[in-house]
Length: 144
Image (cartoon, rainbow, N blue to C red; front, side, top):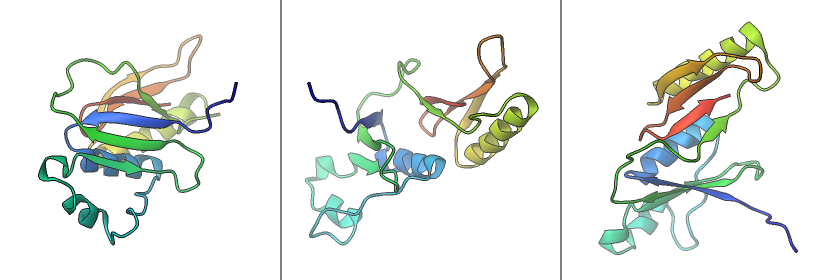
């Protein structure tokens, strides 16, 4: 059996480009080059039938290590808590006040980008602290 070599994380959303650009800022990802024959993604988008324009957007890890993130427009809005979420690992290896300071600093940066802070989950006997947040369309993620 061969192993999977790549994974793409797909987000259902109302505004694919807006959500993708938010995650580019969060993770340091970039928008890939447009398909051959198109100078920009806007040029490519205008070449699509009207009903498909603005229906998808993607971003990639410039180092090639992280998964591609793909954002697709869906007609229904978000109704319940995500069954899957991203953990943005900003406090790896840190504990106590040093960890909290790193989480709070990143939380402040992301709120300025349009994220919403939900709550701090304080450290307990098994886990370090993390901050539960929402992206620009209400998808939950954690600063960990």
